[in-house]
Image (cartoon, rainbow, N blue to C red; front, side, top):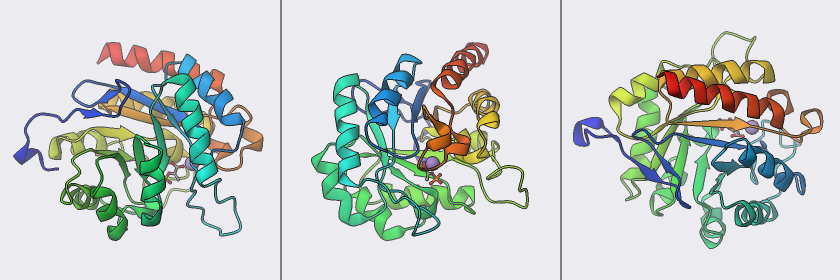
Length: 263
Ligand code: PEP
Ligand code: MN
């Protein structure tokens, strides 16, 4: 991952013509969780607004075991149906090495390793044996160096296709869900040739802060944004408090495009 060994920015091919890194900028959008039929509705809206990859969690890392845990393989299948209709690569979290086969069978393009599994070394090694694109999130209390070492775990098994993602870190501040460490964007670009993603949804935890921080992350040089969108946030099965409606997402996309032109 170290730029010392690879001075030029890496471009990662996420499939279906979607490239990330070295000037190729992409936006991943969709609901926190795949909840059923709403996925395809939300997917159509985010695509119309300019999102280039569709997200949705089928396996959810919830703090409480009594909270919604995700639809599992049924959720993966719904993502595949949306992908087929809309011709967009899909992004979804893998939590368990035993699910590698299900992800491979369905040709899931981008496998997210969530913040909670950022140092799950057996999982990192297992996905490192595939050639899937890995969207690797920074740990909840992870340093930038720990994130880069997590990337090394994947890459040292043979998989060079890693995108690193700043998603906020835990701090003493309680007004936001996490503290968005936007320093990480230029610092990561300095240290690694890998594409850098930023997730203003989990970083802020509140719908009203997601748009401004998406702009800030874009201005800071992120190669990719990941944004949660739901068409009925009040009734979302997870993370409704930070979801943008499709209209709010479309507005944010217009502003992001202006920031891209300005930098
Ligand atoms: C998610 O993307 O829905 C998620 C759980 O993210 P994180 O691992 O960053 O909390
Ligand atoms: Mn979420």
